[in-house]
Image (cartoon, rainbow, N blue to C red):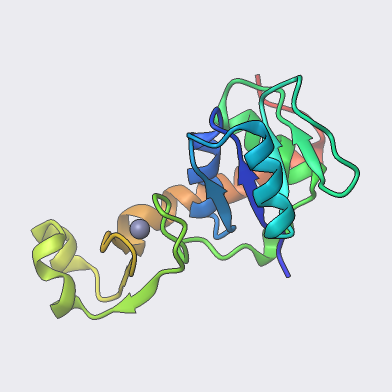
Length: 161
Ligand SMILES: [Zn+2]
């Protein structure tokens, strides 16, 4: 079972990137620190925070994120949790609402993708929550490059400046 997360209000970009890699991340910018903890407890999830005064309850794992840049933040999570990047499933979760994506046929999404994408991509995935459409051609390479970068960073033990 891959780890689940609840991210605090300062970590919206990190939440989106973790979702792009396929991880379950609850994110609501309106939650207080105590609500983040409560959500993490409910979901058996790890709390991610940028707040140095964040509570540290015994029954919830809390990762205090150090860097300002999402690329450094991802490396920190990948190392500290740690994430099994080999088993990551990119493009399986909506980056906006965290819903697992469902496969969609080209004819179902033709009016929601650019014409070039329609012509060059056979397979799509759709979010049952917000109806956003995802496809490998444009989104896949960027996410896979990020996975490679993260795996390398975890191996070398160096953080990019
Ligand atoms: Zn969605």
